[in-house]
Amino acid sequence: MQRLDRFMAAANALYYEAGDPFREFTTAPEICQAFGEILGLWAATVWAGLGRPDPVLLVELGPGRGTLMADALRATTKVTPDFRAALRLHLVETSPTLRAAQEALLPEATWHEAFEEVPSGPLLLLANEFLDALPIRQFVHRPFGWMERFVTEEGRFLEQPAGASAPEAPPDMPLGVVIERCEPALRLASQLGARLRTTPGAALFIDYGPAESAPGESLQALRHGRPADPLAEPGSADLSAHVDFQAFAAAAQNAGAVVSGPLPQGLFLARLGLFRRLDRLAQGHDPALASALLAAGRRLTEPDAMGRLFKVLGLSHPDSPELPGFSP
Ligand code: SAH
Image 1 (cartoon, helix red, strand yellow):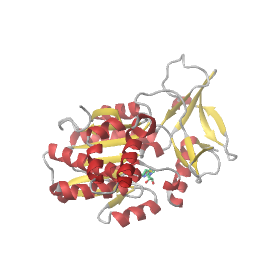
Image 2 (cartoon, protein in one colour):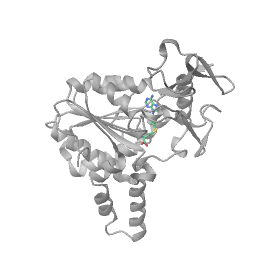
Image 3 (cartoon, protein in one colour):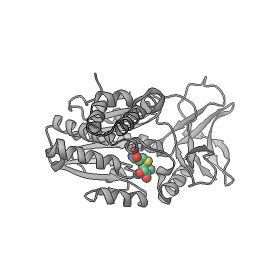
Image 4 (cartoon, helix red, strand yellow):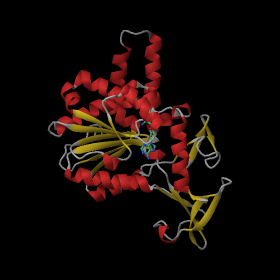
């Protein structure tokens, strides 16, 4: 029997190591090159606002195939060569398979197992669909108190008294309600917040989940592209959970960072010029390409696709100028 977060960590480690995780789902950078390009130019703009520190660390957490960063670097090479020359690329990735894929696209990078290994200094950090992959604990409200979920060998939940780990929740929570807690995300928020308190820099997290903490269970599995039982056949499915942006932002703020957002992804990308960029990409090409680009842009921004469930959260040093994209 294993605590749910340990089960999830082990299952995802197997899953991300096994092969190409993107057989199950398509992330924003895999949908459209303009996504990474825009984030690269966002980083360059923030860098200029910080007084152009040289060198500056450009960090990505969970870079997947490396597509987002490759698109970001291509855009900065063209548009902001000074930033391109000043940046030192640091990638945080635990999967050996995905590291190899990243190395093929981004040979200049230095890899780390965890954020705390990234050297100190001014930094710009990007993370797309990273937090949702981190393991969660789940607590269930029962008549005799809070219970915690464990996973049995047979792939079923078993509840044990939560004791001192019980969530801080109002006593009138309905019975049967589930509360989730992602401890690695909260630790990361504290570490990053503490770093941003003293070091110039900013971070951008893009992921799915509600803007405000809410009870309820969100653990989900995708196997062969379809929703599946998260507890069956560990390592054969992608396990993820909604990100609690409110708790993540509070942890970063308590440690000393300034928080921007969360904002719906669609609004953020539109403000940063996604559709102008798509128009530019379509120019001089046949109408089929133009309409494919428009469809990709819509998928990233429309409320019933990825535009609303996906949120963007910014963290920054107290003296840094306002982060681009967070105000009209
Ligand atoms: N950002 C990419 C990939 C998202 S999938 C994209 O948008 O396409 C999640 C990524 O995080 C994968 O690269 C996975 O291997 C990595 N990952 C998951 N858990 C991790 C952990 N604890 N530490 C570092 N990387 C992790």
